[in-house]
Image 1: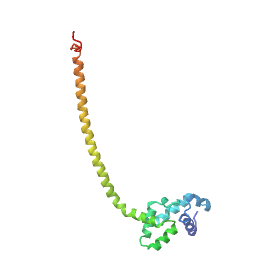
Image 2: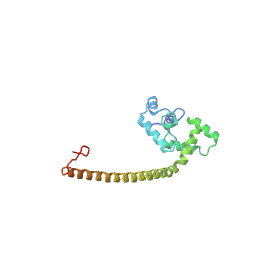
Image 3: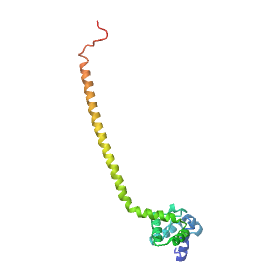
Image 4: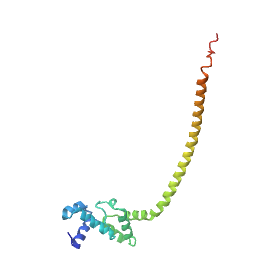
Length: 167
């Protein structure tokens, strides 16, 4: 069944803030299957439109939606950003946080690599220390085992003399 473009747009508008209705809610209201609604949202996202999930909080927005919001507001002044945020149920601080996260996204890998390198170096040092300690303990164990074997061999041949009670 094909739906008119105006109806699709009206339904997609219900997914956007300030309504932020979930797809199951819209499906019950409109009598359209959930699968169709998910496909419409997916197609709208593919066109580059900002289509957050049905979660009423910005935490429900995927990374692509957050990035799209940052790109859309990049050239706006404070007044326009405020209007944009009101329209979509956001705060200007959230856009600022998302922008900072986007700016640091490429540096994350370099920073993460430095941390991983430092951790690996510390791990390698710890492994060397443990290996040295293990070798030392293995040598001591071998020596102790050899002494026990020698003692067992020597015991039957030796006479036991009690030095505390001389006779």
